[in-house]
Image (cartoon, rainbow, N blue to C red):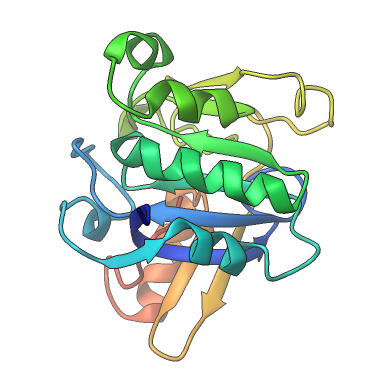
Length: 208
């Protein structure tokens, strides 16, 4: 049986979403509708790109410099089984760290009983949990707002010198054939400054 993920987008090789040089998967579909979400087009639970986890793993590891994966969306825990399978397959090929965002709290995830949740948590090194709250977005760290908590589920990334909660944010602007997109956790100031340049209040799909 082929395990597939419903993927909104991917990025192979970035320094904007965690320590090292990472590949990112943004899944399609999210049960939350956080005010100020930077990727509202990825909230609807609709078919986007349906891809097998083995094919996706090969895509994400195409650059030999990649030493980690980041899962975001959308809501990764809504596709926990597929992401857990992806993590296992990718780690057979390379020694990788894994960072995962979620709107759920860690305690709720541990008690949820949802298939795949325990398996995915067992693969994750750093979990950034909690819903985005625009009024608490302080422009710092890899998390979107100050209420979100960084959980080191393993010690792998704890002492690498990367300040998940307080670091200055970095964002990459990527220009493709059909879109201009942001990779990273953009500050509100950055989005405001980019809007008139690119022609509208929300001209580009934000990616976190």
